[in-house]
Image (cartoon, rainbow, N blue to C red; front, side):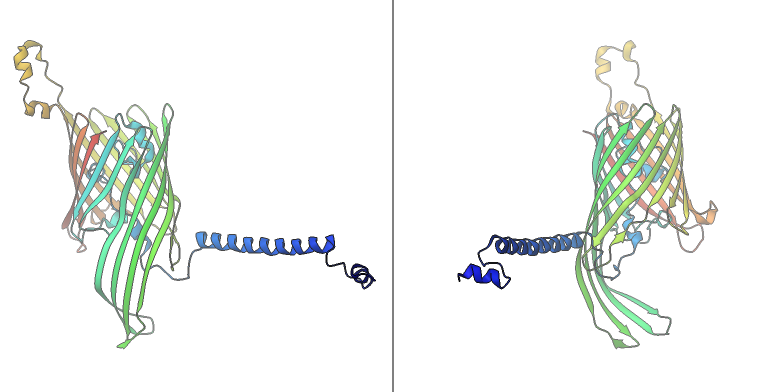
Length: 396
């Protein structure tokens, strides 16, 4: 009896039968398929995992950044409906449709460490002297970079007492940077403009901490982590002859994933603004509300008055006199703007208000703006500390 016949008699397929060959191939492909699925699952888990159940040693409010642009600062941050320069990328991307020229802008802040813009939920995590915005835009869209955090803390000491009465002392070293890169797209109809910000966020965190509980040293902690995330903002602007209505939804979809830490979901906020403009005068107001429970409302109001001298008619002058138009005359033919603003949290009672002032000048596509934020001190008295910001813009 042959080998194949014996195998068939005892109920086994021959070793070289087609059925056995097919079975081996199916077993191989099943193993391969399972391995592929496991690999794909691990990749997606790595991409979208929230990391370990460990809280990031940086609170969400430190992602807020700072007020962008000296012009907006001078008007108390009431800029959602005005948004008529390149910083509209930040305030309301739909406002870029108002630009008549391609424009670039850079903003720089000079501040004491005590002035943080607490009413707008701003950050202590920027340096005293810091570039706050660099962008370029046209009426079709734009792009920008802005830092959200850039700090170093060495041997920072804190002392607390927990619910059990234990005395906890900590010494912390922290290096933290976070940057936001923005691509803005806009679309316009006759009266309505819409804008979209697509944001990429990238950061680094270095953290080391020594802790003593009731004079007993604990195990020290140290870590270096990277963070990557995304964000979306949506803006709307309705343009009337004298009245403009603006709205902005910030961080509609926004999240940052950190190595070894929980992912951070950025808090969404909504802003509604009105602006009335006539004869060089602008009155503006904004209402900002975080879209979460028990959050405070922020009110911003601003006024701007622009002065522009029409160029002299030289028809009665000799041609050589026309050619001698002085630099001072050219300066006067530009547009000078004076600004004031106020902002308050929850109410407009005087004790809750901070103030802003500013000045700006534009000539032939170039502009410079200077703003001051007067933040009320914690004493509750009418004492203020200033923070300064300067913006320079130019046609491209």
